[in-house]
Amino acid sequence: MASLEVLVTGTESTVGAVLCKAVAAGATAVGMDVCVTRKYRGNSDWLALYGAGDDERGAARVAHIEKQGRVAHWDLGYTRNYRDPAAANFRVSINDLHPHRFFDATPTDAKRWDACRQPLREDADPNGHVLVVGLGRKSRYALDIYDWEVVQLQQTQQRFPDRKILYRPKPQRDRDAHIIWEPRDGTSPIEQVLRGASLVICRHSNVAVDACVAGIPVECEDGAAYWLYSRGSSPSREARLDFLHRLAYWQWKCSEMKEAWTFLQKVSASR
Image 1 (tube, rainbow, N blue to C red):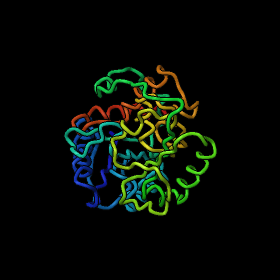
Image 2: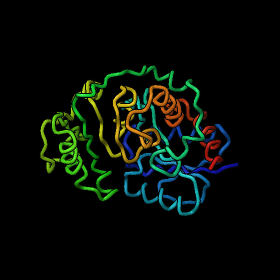
Image 3: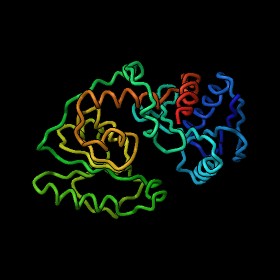
């Protein structure tokens, strides 16, 4: 019987606290030996937590990996990442912050993606604007990267002197005031911002997944979508669907946690 420690530090958001409770219940339902802790113990096969950007939970994640344990890292989903935990998808990865290293071992059937009811679109315009997506505050600190956006915006302007370069910052609470660039749009729905774009440039943003759905070419350096776009910025419609089918197995609703743990234990055995 596999054992699981669910770390709930008390600093999680309300959504995160609900998710952790569901994670523990789902693991118990598949027969795992579950304990919920306020401080990391590190005595279990698996560690589950919500939001590795937090210092305490991030340190626990690193410590458990160093012990050769498995970490199920949960966060808001790649799609339908609502703040209502009853309706939201929650993404998960094993050890890494994103699950692309497991994609080759992930099912390719359409069942889970079709349930999302997000049909593919073809919104790209080869002569349209280029969208540069900013980093969040936690990513900047965790990666020790503070000028990524400035460099990308400048390089993108040099590459595409005749195109509009639009900057998509993270919410203003992330304090990107040091980035002087216009035009920018950090408030419009992402579907609207993507419409008519010729390219999305990001480091590891979920916007790459939104762009995949919308049929916009993507250049990225990390994140789940790197599995797809490391092979080229303009994959075929079939390749996009194949990626999204796999991605759907790495995000689950609170009501699906029993099925999620069945999947996680099975796919973890493949590596």
